[in-house]
Image 1 (cartoon, rainbow, N blue to C red):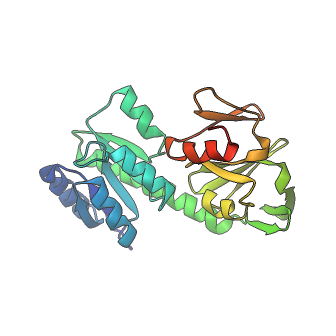
Image 2: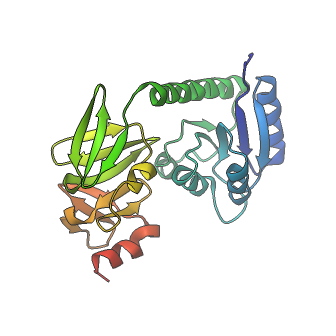
Length: 248
């Protein structure tokens, strides 16, 4: 395999023999291995300094944080694409991991061809998303009490008061109103910055809600209801959300 520009890969694996073998295989395939980390904490520090193009993340790691928790942090910050390596194929682990929207799962032990194919598919999808970001003209601009959302060849006006909530979809953002859902090629965090802070609050890494549109909150304070949709409240954001709603 010949790459004109080598894609940078970070390996996060606490079994050094396995990590070294993966590194050797990927080097032979033409990838640039920027590092091997055995803990999620060290991996996150490295990503902040030297972000890779893709992360191969083992689910079971040394330290307080496992690979899924690390992936959740990555989704919230750098949004670096990742592939999970795992010997845990049970449904509970899968359901936890799938929330972080990985590009693939590779079950251990795996063959070199399997790894090669998974990476080719992942980088192909990454290239498509980057191309969409460069060619599609969806943009969001703010003017006082309204947004202007570029949809193909026109700018559509959306009143901020009509926005129910924002939803992350990888590097895109869905803007939900009662009548329509707008998909824009702008990350959730960027759109969130355009919202008035007194009305919009982050309740989950994937959701920012218009607090005036909340119809109900579950008894266990696990989700909000807006226009019939259940919006998850993360443990990290729950206390702040409840304070905001004055329900404590």
